[in-house]
Length: 250
Ligand SMILES: Nc1ncnc2c1ncn2[C@@H]1O[C@H](COP(=O)(O)OP(=O)(O)OP(=O)(O)O)[C@@H](O)[C@H]1O
Ligand SMILES: [Mg+2]
Image (cartoon, rainbow, N blue to C red; front, side, top):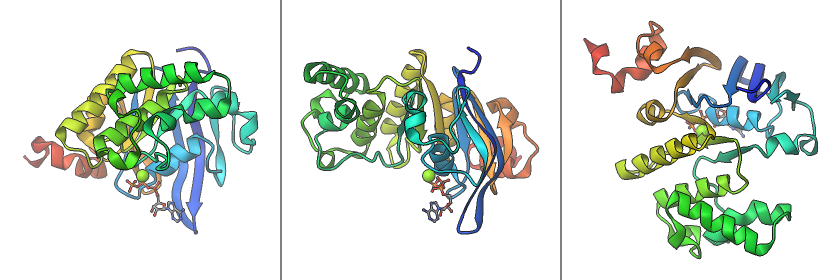
């Protein structure tokens, strides 16, 4: 790991309407270590991603991208750092009025650095990487759930980010869809991308990540490897693992 090559949160506090979502939350995503943040629905997982991207301002604490503290900075001051991170939103968040090709190329068009022909080349490359190049001229409404997720991933890849955040990428997919997404994440990791996923899907987490953070009642209750998690004595962690680990019932 290169020094300073990471994203981190320090003692982050965030509340909504007086309810604490995060309290003194420390988190570190080093380049090359693929992580998953686990937690039940409503625990604050999506909120963490938004805070890491600077889309939300914390009540207190700091967020760093590389060595730059982005907390309190206007987005224009951390565009270069922000550009290294892409997010695949929960549900995809594709633009319904645009074709698949326009969705994938949107950010590049907005940035205005590449010609039309160059953008089209990137769009085809990314769509082909995720295996949906035949959907180029379709609209999101014409796609299956699994295809939408793959297009959302292609869109995230368009600007060639170093870090990719995945918000519940497998929710609502059938087993083949889940397998495809896991496979894509592994291929991205093999290409040197660092992934951060938030999910309650344990099987996908263990398939694609090396480190696991468990968020419970606004705090980090556990942080470690799969082995450490499976042998954890923390009651809430054991409860969370129960449905997938029959050995815990014995
Ligand atoms: N804009 C908002 N206004 C009010 N409450 C909100 C808002 N955004 C999030 N919340 C609340 O904050 C908490 C954390 O939300 P968040 O979306 O981060 O949870 P999550 O862990 O991603 O849940 P899920 O697994 O269902 O996606 C939830 O209880 C949610 O209801
Ligand atoms: Mg969420």
